[in-house]
Length: 465
Image (cartoon, rainbow, N blue to C red; front, side):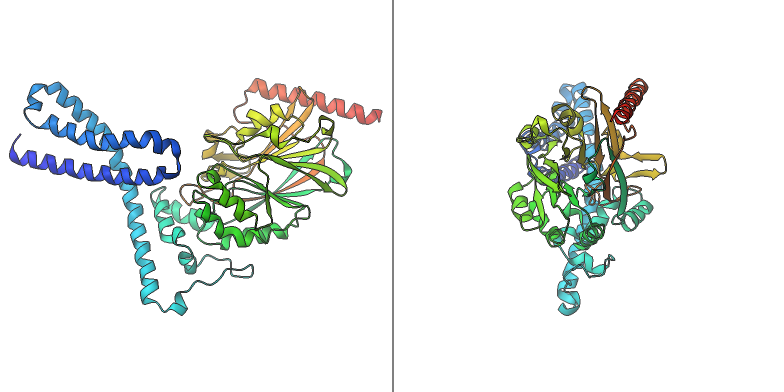
């Protein structure tokens, strides 16, 4: 190896090493609240950062290179496989950090060069203007508008970014769904339950979107409000942004919530303590015996199970609900929709309706008429909307609604999947079959046949009565 080529090689190796150290530091920041990554993956990653460049240097420099040409080629191949993904990650992270620098520069300009009276953010209130404006860029240092745009730029093509950020991000979709419950007590007919989910306070540019969502919810005059988890992204202190709006939530028989997987990435006690100052009552593996028009109903809430967590305890949540209470309407709040299939349907078949979130509908997709496609569809059998199946073992319908969420996870972007506020109205009737995308044709046919037999039994019972 000539002096020039050796010099170029070691310069390149030094650049790759610097990029790897940069990527490793960013990984440590990402893994800070993820115990498994911090405990197992980070040491292996750190070992690779130090060892791979040493091995490549040895493989390129005599006398080691002369000992085995094959070994040298193997080392260079391993090095290429090791560094190429790092270059891609570096390109993405570097763009984000450039935007972060622009954000810092923007903040410094506001602080030092703009008159304090003009730059001070105004306190958001229920009566404030709801439009996103430049003042939203400076409300919270963790939620700068420019940095959010930077994350979006590295996530999707530029045209989609602009459309997704400004058109869909806070364009709340109020969906009205009738939940048909067979033999529903007349006193519960028309009960209006409003569900919101996945607020992800850390993803909001300011508290304005949450004020708008709360105003929309209150304008619907709900009997019951359910918030199905993920109040924050990672830092529990993010919840402070949404506390003032949450204090204004109103419902005739109460506002209740459960925890999600993101809520457990930090000290969940902070979230409990903070939400205790609002109208939201967290149900953590417990239930409430409620009344509507004098008729009982049970609202059950479980902690999160799924995404590597196992905090849910349905047995504890339903302790005190008797087997003789099977005829009482039962509603379950469970953040991850997979909990419906894995636990709720088998352990508590008397639960009539389960409310979940977690999937965000994938944030990217198409929903036009009968066309329903979202990224979450590939990961979750029940990824968005209403599902209803007949459990023939107990001769009872069980239903699930998966809310598409208000906030965002990952890139602060929605394209085709709008943030959702769901109005669920309970009515008496037999629901249509709405099964998962993974059900086979034979399973669907069996579901339909069971449903027809169920309808015949209900009609016969009504005629006999």
